[in-house]
Length: 117
Image (cartoon, rainbow, N blue to C red; front, side):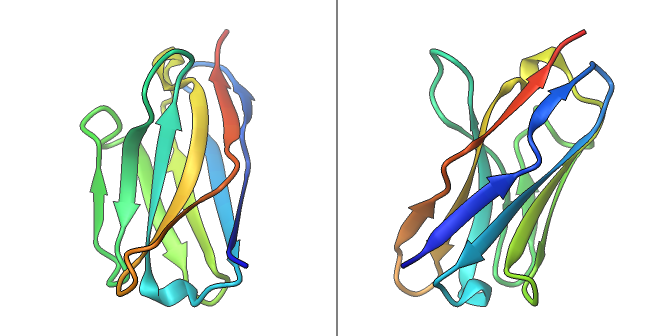
């Protein structure tokens, strides 16, 4: 079955960096659009960044210029490089996979990112 496993979260000071990884299995990774979402306590889950099967990327305005999404089809992994982190970036970060042809969506279990001094 499809599995998405996030890693790389943690506690970081404002201005710091983290790199999240999402390892996929049980799927043909290259035909899935990949994305990162985040959800802060009491808030809805928001889209952070996307990377299509063709490698095109898009970002929420709040993270443009600070976050970079990338994918490695050989490693079945999508990354989120997060720089210049702010306290408002604190959330659980989720990886998602959307089938280009099937329309199916899968979610990872999430990884906590906390930005605090």
